[in-house]
Image 1 (cartoon, rainbow, N blue to C red):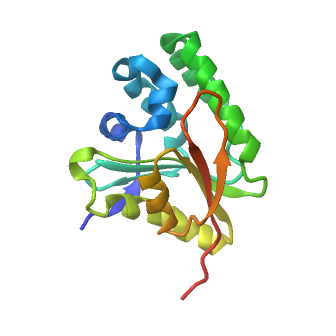
Image 2: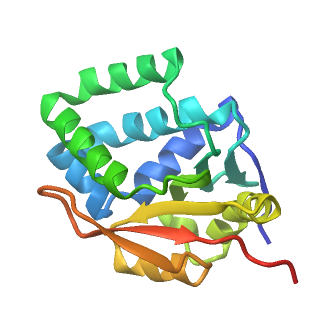
Image 3: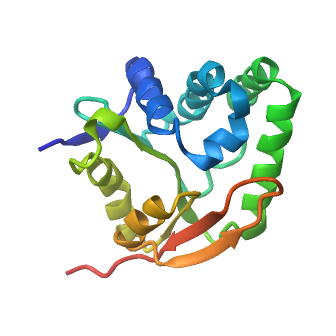
Length: 196
């Protein structure tokens, strides 16, 4: 059975490869990256990973084929490092991708939970390793911490299968996200779970 540990910078290549492969058919990522998915997916995954890894809130399976990238409560403000990373990605991706990223962010901001919460920005398992429980394993440390803190956990998804996966794990509050030109998307919220 897989175990989870905090990621470090040495995990970048494996994480980026797993995330890019996992989201190759995801409606939101295909909307954001468009026809340039193959060229841009690893850069996009890297831009999500790099600003988060040093916080200790990125978790990976021991074989680094599954990852959960969280943002801790109060940690969502851009830093000079994250701004530089995203500027570089946007420059390589082009204006159309940048506009879609902005639209996607505006749509999320319209429904985002206003109280302190943990945000799961990425949950991915390489397709070759899916269905073996790794995603649940890498989510578990932060879900347990959120329960201990009495805080909500939130995320968005654009696939019905993922929506059902998260609902089975307690993300039962659902809000429709309206993304201009984008796929049907849902904002999901998990309330703190009582201790057994």
